[in-house]
Amino acid sequence: MFNNKPTEIATTLVDQATHAADQVAKTSQQLANSALEGVRNTSHQLRVKAEHASDNTVRFIQHEPVKAMLMAAATGAALMALISLFSHSRNRY
Image (cartoon, rainbow, N blue to C red):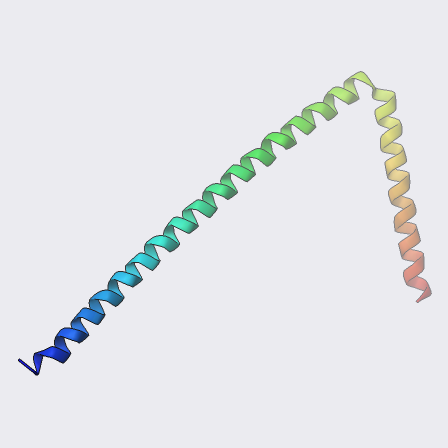
C-alpha cells in the first residue's frame, strides 16, 4: 500500500491540473466570445452613425447646395495650404 501513495498523489495532481486547465480554457473562450460580441456591437453602432452622418450630409447638400460647395472649396483650399506649408518646411531642412 505504501508504494501506491505516490501514484495516488500524482494521479490526484494530474486530475487537478487537468481540471484547472479545462477551467482556464473555458474562461478564455468566454472572454474571447465576450470581446467578439463587443466588437460586433461597436461595429454596428459605428455603421449606424456613419449612415446617419451620410444621410445628414446628403440632406444638407440638397437643401443648401451653394453653402455645401463653398464649404468644400474652403476645405480644399485649407488642405492645399497645409500641404504646401509642410512641403516647403521639409525642403528647408
